Length: 488
Image (cartoon, rainbow, N blue to C red; front, side):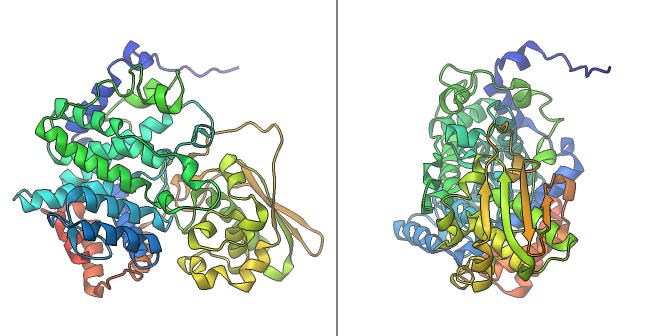
């Protein structure tokens, strides 16, 4: 009988002593050369992916226009480009619009901790553009380092939580909750904050923390899409305040009223996950996933399972008697019930938060695309007829597990009963876009081109080509703001 020997933790790693300070030091001092090549490549893909999904939302989502119009009417100094629409706004307000756009299609990347890229990349570009106006250029290496610092902290905070399916159990959106910290780390790094001022920036971010899951209960609301907008605005402004000398909260993690006690309500976080091997261990590599289908992460396992059954058994829509979603996390059930409403979503975001509708699309068409959530797609007879065959069955007493970047990987099962009496089932342990099924630049580029084709302000084909070239070799760029200027 073998046993696994776990490494002995230092007293600080076991108790969380000075955890806030250590994260601040990590964000302020991380070196580009210390970042694994694989992570740098992944981060470049995240940049292109985030720009694409945000720009695509500008021409598709009603709330995109509402938010853009609001910020436009505010006026103020023209500092930072608003993606998809063009025009410029003060840095915090532009970060709010761009961060909000990033999640409106629900097509942005995912990880343990929610959507890390929309929490860090919009405030990152906001600071870069503002600094460019002041005569300071941010090069590609520095930009990538700042994004890695933010996403690493974001992921570590989530992995430290010991409550299964905690975002459902405690009622928070991890993207927004941690985005105040990760966005502050990215913005502060680009502003060149030292360890002391970085600690203040993270503390200021913490003092603005919010992100209730109530926004996703019942009918989907515009607020659900704006989670990274709020955190990005706060992070951009907070880092600027810290730069000017504003003092932020201390011990925002380990303190009596720190994040784990106040928000997550756990007294036993995994402190090693937070501060262990900072600068040498990057957990994002094991948890990150790109979305190849434009819907909520909890639809990814059910989509994958349905596609596996469809292809393996060469099923046609007319072969299907019924489809049953079995088990999964609390998020799975939330996206399946009430069944009548989930089968007939009335607006785009409701469709993306519906497993019955999205599974119906996948079985009917063999793919799920942006078009399926347009007004025309939501009324498609074939998709609706298949959605009527989808139901949900809970597993009483099932042990809840962490959902990871894909909600219910390895937990949810899809059963398809065929009209000739067969009962087929699939329980995938990974989905396309995740670490076990990495996608290449070809997939990311195709997705980017598709998304930007929906831009509110059309973008020239030559500019799209050039942006792809610049991002693929981002580490060689002297000024990253050239990328957003081509998309304006």
